[in-house]
Image (cartoon, rainbow, N blue to C red; front, top):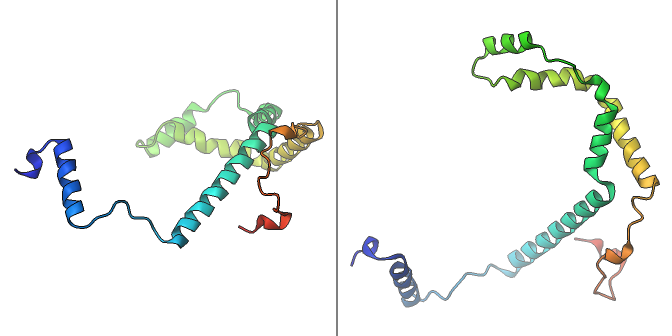
Amino acid sequence: MELNARSAPQLVGYIERRLAACGARGKVIPSDAVLTTQLRGGCIQRIATAVQGEVERLLSLDAVTARVQRRFRHILPTAADRTMVEAALARDPARPWTAPLWIHTLDIVNPHYDAIMAAVREELLETIQHGALLGDEASAPKDDDPNATEDDEDY
């Protein structure tokens, strides 16, 4: 019987029988060094995810962003320049109509970049000073290793 004439379960069974007949013994597990590297990398990623989640929870980056955006409402244009969009599209009709507007945002926002960054720092400091970081310590996972020290930070 040809392979393509078999049903999916028949084909899987055939392949498994042929692999067994050839001495295949299951899934290949890499060397101890590869296993260790993968495990350590996974642990580092879980720590990073936990830190980022807690920082987001404590500082509410969306709220900080919204407050900074409100502080710079005065730089927002009251109308878009249709003639600028039409001229840009006449030069390059393949571009989306949003492209010239997006490029124009640089002209509007960039002159205020330093002030925006200062506002971000002010908002973060205010958030920290008003106790946002006084969260409950009970939610922190406990250290299972009683012999662990602060010097165990070497990854």
